Image 1 (cartoon, rainbow, N blue to C red):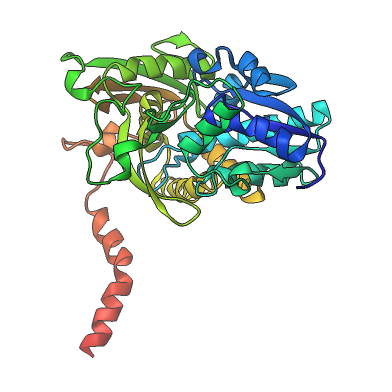
Image 2: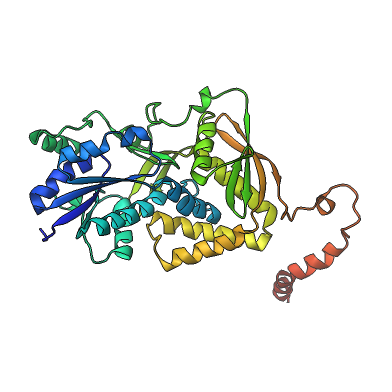
Length: 401
């Protein structure tokens, strides 16, 4: 074991991190400071967290409110890129990791720690996301990952370890799902989801109404943007976090935002997850609909390329990199034109854009109409098509000799 005196642990109060505190003290003989991030996961997960950490052996517990920073500095910039991982995943867990790891480093500096610790397993993506942030912001601090060191391999092992030391935990062998929640989403893994042929049971979903049980009457919500930033929901001026909370509430009631996917993890294996992202689904749909009004074909194509690349940058934990900065800068330049209003209809699990307007709109009814017009000479299309297809014409002529 390395010689460290004070470790700051990313602490959730769950089974893993509850066991990590005494394990660190026993194996490293050091002081353990618990750090917890409030990224909008809900009061239930944060209630009693300080007392639980101290009871597990931590000398201090710092709970840092990151909700507004998370939404405004990480979620909203990601929205401007249009990033969606592998066509479906809205990157909820991925987006939270850099803001959490950054705050953990800040706490470590504040308390004079010489090491950082996380509870990520050696199979997952999060170990990469946390440690890439540590490397970028605190390369001088030692990083400890107990799941890569201890000999415990199962939930039962951890429960037995805590029982031997009379450390209370609310975890049990019957809690089969692994969940991660924040203001953007909640993810579900484990249980029957480990069999991709097994349909998720109703017990999996916790945030959204089953679309089959959603209201029979649709509801419409209006989102207003100013240079890429969501400023109003249904005409009400809200902070980024408040706007997302409102969208989550409205969309969840209609069963919007559920996905069930098999994704490629960064470490090489495939995993299945069920995700609920109600407000985020509505927000991204609205943003992309407004983009189609204000960006021309070439600009939108390039923004889509940014989104594809950025989805991997975010998923792979490369937020604090030059590539990340460059992609965000490119997306921000397009976002300056994304101003206007979008109406989204919510009904039985679906979010459908029904109305759109923008002062920067490139849409012209005069040009697009199927009726008579005085602005477009259809004869001009012949010359355009001839030049546009000229290379194909030349190639065909050469084949014909």
